[in-house]
Amino acid sequence: MSRASVARHTGLTNVTVGAIVTELLDQKLVSETGETSSTAGRPGRLLELNATAYVAVGAKLADRALTCELTDLQANVLAEAVIPLEHPSAEEVIAALDHLVSELLVRASVDRSQLLGIGIGLPGVVDRAAGIARLSPFLRWVDVPLADLAEEALGLPVVVENDVNTLALTERWFGRGQGVADFLLVTLGQGIGMGIVLDGDLHSGARGGVGEFGHVVVTDSLETCDCGNVGCLEAISSEGALLRRSAALTNSSDVDPVVSMDDLYQRAKHDAPHAALLVEAGEAVGRGIANIINVLAPELVLVRGLGNFGESLLADHIRLAAERHTFPGLADSTELIFEPLDDGPWARGAASLVLSELFMSPVAVTSALGIPGSRYQ
Ligand SMILES: [Zn+2]
Image (cartoon, rainbow, N blue to C red; front, side):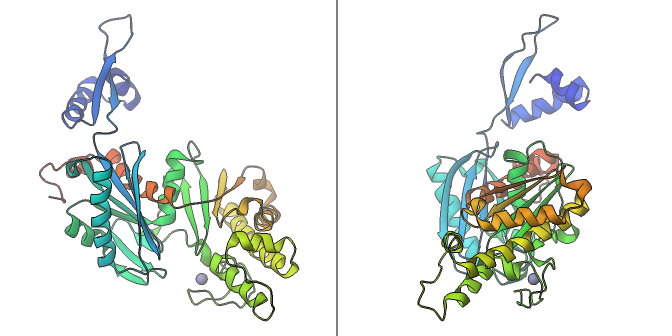
């Protein structure tokens, strides 16, 4: 892309674009790669993003492990590392981050001065603007100012966000959500979450409290949810709930207990009580999805998680219930897709948090690159 085409796309004057490009060249964020082939007038120099000039770290914090990925400026993963952590404190997380970041930089042969910052995705209500994990039942955290604590200890910019939101960012930029203005990402696992992208932007809600899809009330079941309420989706359809309910079925029999979701899908093929568990769980998830479709009318609902569930009875009944409860006028305009899920995309999305701050805010660029006036000095 030339300076002239940047001016055309942005509506900025040639003079302004020239000044900005000079600054970006100085910071090594872009480089000149050749000349335009235009026959009219003087040829322009072509510019491209220098993707390897800087790197970011994305971290996915779960209740039993911390996964970190080092990425370049286009969120290509350069190295990955995992540390097991059992219900860690903020201090334990920061110590593990310190260790993993150093290891990743060595493994990718990248100098620490090229590291722009760390994005951390964690379960629960996370206020990105304030940098605070407000409530994370899985981690047993309340009002933990993780961004400030980590910035102070590590000397790097740190951004925190709800983990499902970091995954939604990955889908938005690199996955199924590319070019889709309005979509929902539903994650099924130990918890049940939702990332909401509207008009191409991640919807954050007041103080980060968006997407607690696991606690929509969709059932008359009297199972108590971890949040203390009854009727929550998570109380009958999360991985923990399904395995717990399966254990209750096999407790008094001499049948082997079910140990994983894939195991449960297999058992349901020839065992009516297990099949009924999946039907009930799928019906509840589908009903919840239909409720949100009826309010937001997204183009796409992407459901991810729970092992190889795409071919299972659970997926079948999510789809059936979602179709049955979606308002007829909306049913044809929403696509429903099921995919499995591993830990990789979560951390990549967290790294993208750092990159999005870099690309969206000139203040963040100067901050991250150590220019005076930064909050990170
Ligand atoms: Zn609940």
